[in-house]
Length: 158
Image (cartoon, rainbow, N blue to C red; front, top):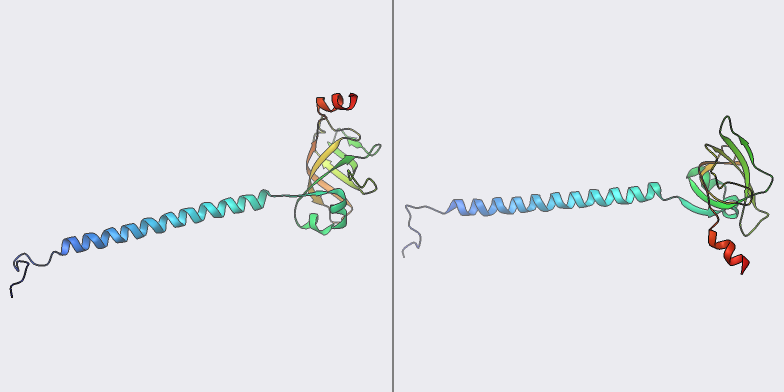
C-alpha cells in the first residue's frame, strides 16, 4: 500500500504548528479580554461602593449612632430655628437639624466651610459626614441647602 503523501516532502509540520500557534494566540487573547473585563467590573463595583453613601433621616441616624461612625452617611433634615451659630472668621458653622417627620428628633451638627447662600432657619439641608468620637455631634464634610422652588409659592397661594 502506497503512502498518500510523498515521503520526500515529509509530514506537513508547518500547518500543524501554525494551527497550534493560532490556538495559543486565541487563548491568550480570550484570557486578556477576560482579565480586562474583570478589571473593569472590579473598578465599577469598587467605585460604586466607595461613593455609595447611605441616605438616612435624622431619626434613623439617632436610632443607630454607630453606623455613621463606621462609615459616612448622608442625612436629610430641617435646620432648627434659633440654633445657627456661624463663626465667619474661622468658617465654623454649628447648628441643630431635626427630622422632617419626627420633629422631636434633633442632632447637633458642625460644619467647617463657607456657609451656603440658601442656608437659613427651617431650610432643608442634606449633610454628608459622620459622628465625632463622642457620638454627640455630627461632623459634616458636605452641606447642601435646598433652594425653595419658585413654583412652591405659586402652589401655596392657590
